[in-house]
Amino acid sequence: MWAELLPIGRSSASGGYRRFAWTGADADCRAWFRQQAEARGLAHEVDRNGNQWAWLGDPAEGNAVVTGSHLDSVPDGGAFDGPLGIVSAFAALDELRAGGASFTRPVAIVNFGDEEGARFGLACVGSRLTAGQLTVEQAHRLTDGDGISLPQAMEAAGHDPDAIGPDPDRLARIGAFVELHVEQGRALDLSGDRIGVASAIWPHGRWRFDFRGEANHAGTTRLADRRDPMLSYAETVLAARREAELAGAVATFGKVAVEPNGVNAIPSLVRGWLDSRAADQESLDTVVGAVQKAARDHAAAHGVDLDVERESFTPVVEFDHALRDELARILGSDTDLKVPVLGTGAGHDAGILSGRIPTAMLFVRNPTGVSHSPAESATEDDCVAGVTALADVLEGLACT
Ligand SMILES: [Zn+2]
Image (cartoon, rainbow, N blue to C red; front, side):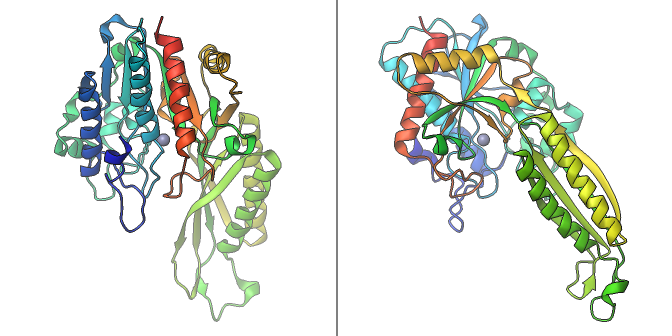
């Protein structure tokens, strides 16, 4: 499976993947998924929102056990983020069927569309539409960097954009969704475990900081006369790092815009975006509150005006406790794997669906912790351990 999948959408320049929603590379990934389904005699379907499903058993029976992930990528993403969950799902199903497993519930493998949001700027579009967390009107307004709208892109790829919308009947037929994913951090590497179970997705948000000063000549303006917003911005970046360390959280200024953006001009505006995430709401509030206070203090000291606006926010997602405990029990019972339960700072389709159906996640160790980069990695032994764990989980949930 990897041999066929790895060349698709790979940039020879960076070695990373560019599999953006509704592009040619995405279509090639989807063709691969369909082939894998049909080669196994699984019923293949594409739902109204462009998510792909491969069914073993009759979905109409309900209480289905679903596993899978996504095949799209961020710009120059790694090989495992998403595809590992789908390859492992097919491999786990193969293992169970080869062992003569007898299924008591329908099982499906899913490829959620447009998980990374690399093209239209919003993550998890396929699962959000399905869960009704993104309205049709909002989806129709999404455009990519070339001004192509989501409906235009869908239509060009052969998907009917008028069909999109909430899919409560589909969700009602699913009893559990388990997503296997490469870990996007080093917790398992540090604990020495191959496999972990997710406890929660950290609350996270984005805040825009506008520091406004006065543009002037970089050569002729005395230091004492300047109102330079770059200075207060720089001190705020350092404060974010300090406050995140104190709270055991993360805080990142990863995007910045400067006006007039000239080498020989003192800036009039520095606009920076803070992304911050923490294990709980109180820690996140503490970090963001302290960063805002530092920004205000430093802005005042430099005669700079400050506006802060929260642009997006996602509260904590607690995965279903009963399903999580069931996974830990299944994985602990007949192996001596001890299964650590981890929080994660990254969003996933499983997080979107968790408000509607019981969901859980399995993580596979990533020795460097690097993700959203060509350097993302997982060893073959760990990937095999992931398949075995997923097969155990599917057997425990869906077989007699
Ligand atoms: Zn992912």
